[in-house]
Amino acid sequence: MASSLTSSFQFSNLKSGFFGERNELRATSVPVPFVGFSRKTIECKESRIGKQPVLVPSNVTITLEGQDLKVKGPLGELGLTYPREVLVERVESGILRIRKAVETRRANQMHGLFRTLTDNLVVGVSKGFEKKLQLVGVGYRAMVEGKELVLNLGFSHPVKMTIPEGLSVKVEENTRITVSGYDKSDIGQFAASIRRWRPPEPYKGKGIKYADEIVRRKEGKAGKKK
Image 1 (cartoon, rainbow, N blue to C red):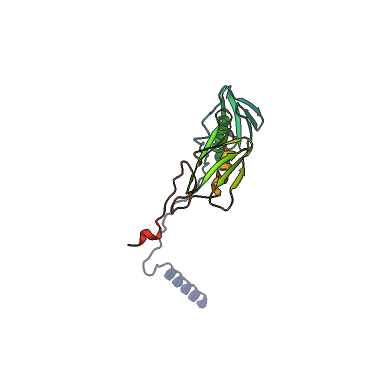
Image 2 (image 1 turned 120 degrees about the vertical axis):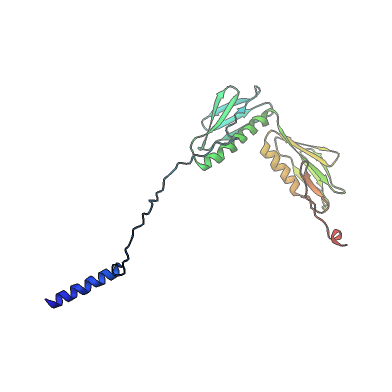
């Protein structure tokens, strides 16, 4: 009996010392605010370019079959297949609208892109596009011989390039080249292949450059000496 009283007394002393009752200390509880997370649906904003309508002139015929669009005009005929993220619809006889089929990031990217491609089709078959290049350098010349563009660019032999079907090339003053047609992508690709033969170098600016291109010039070694 005495041993049980002694053990209970020791346990009560240990308990009181642990909670600070002997030193007159009391444990206080601090309220913790509840932290929660809320989900919020983020909608993709509509493209500023994609929401603009495509105006179709009266001399252009449009054929729309599902996701396939065919455009025919006085200069030629072009077609375009749309991805499933975007839809094309004819609002009126002379207006086309491109809208998103789903609300995703890829659909937002495709929205503006395919609106621009659609406008390029309509403008291409009705008015056409052109890209101008300029040859800079002593002895650099260009001429058209039949269906070939002949370039003299300082190599041991002239460079002959076959003009693609649907494009026309005109040379003025032996140094100015104009590539025109109704397909904007073909015009840009052929103009880039011409420029690739002799890109403009940054010291003297010699080479083939676009007419609206600005070549950033570098200072040579002679300019650094003082």
